[in-house]
Image (cartoon, rainbow, N blue to C red; front, side):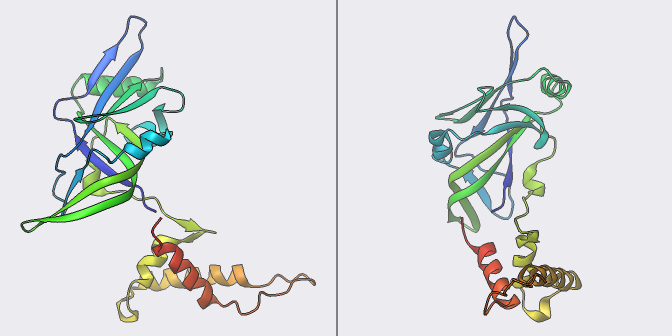
Length: 234
C-alpha cells in the first residue's frame, strides 16, 4: 500500500498563535470540496474523507515538510488536535521547543511558506467525468501525517513508501510482472533476477540433517504468491 502525499495551498494563510508563556501553535486547514492542481486528473477531498481516522482516534503525526526525523506534534500526546468542520479538516499543532520547530514558526510568520501537505492511505475513491477531465473524489482515507512548511508541492513529485516482504520489493516486482516479456527493460530483468535469487534462498532447504524441503514448492509458486500480495487491495 502506497502513502500518497497531497499538496494543499492554504490561500487564507496558516494561523499562528503564541500565548503569554511562549507556547507556539500552528493552525492549518485541509479544505473539503476544493479542486487540486491538474495531475492528468483532478482530485477533490470530500467531507467524509477523514471521518474514520477521527472516529478511530488514529495517532496522526505532524511533521516539518514530511520529515519523520522532525516531528512537530502527534494526536497521542495531545500536541496535535484534528477536527472536522464544514470548510475542512482543522489541524492545530502545539510546537515543541526545538530549533527546527522555531524555524517552522519563523518561516510561516515571515511569509516564506504558506502551504501544508498531508500523507494518507487511500481507502475509498470514486471517479467521475467532467467534460474531458477526470474528477477523483477521495471519500475515505487513512490519515497518517500532516506537514507544515512544505516548500515544494507534493502533487508534482508524489512520494511512495516501498512495500517489502522479506526484503523483496513488491512495488518493483509488480512493475516488472505487469509487462510482457518483450517490454522488459534491462533494469526490469536485473530486478527479476535479483528477486529470483532471493526467492531461491528463501525456499532452499538448509543443510541441517533434519531439514525437509516443503513439497511441491517452486520459485514460480512463490513468485505468483508475491504478485498476488503486491496487487491485492488492502
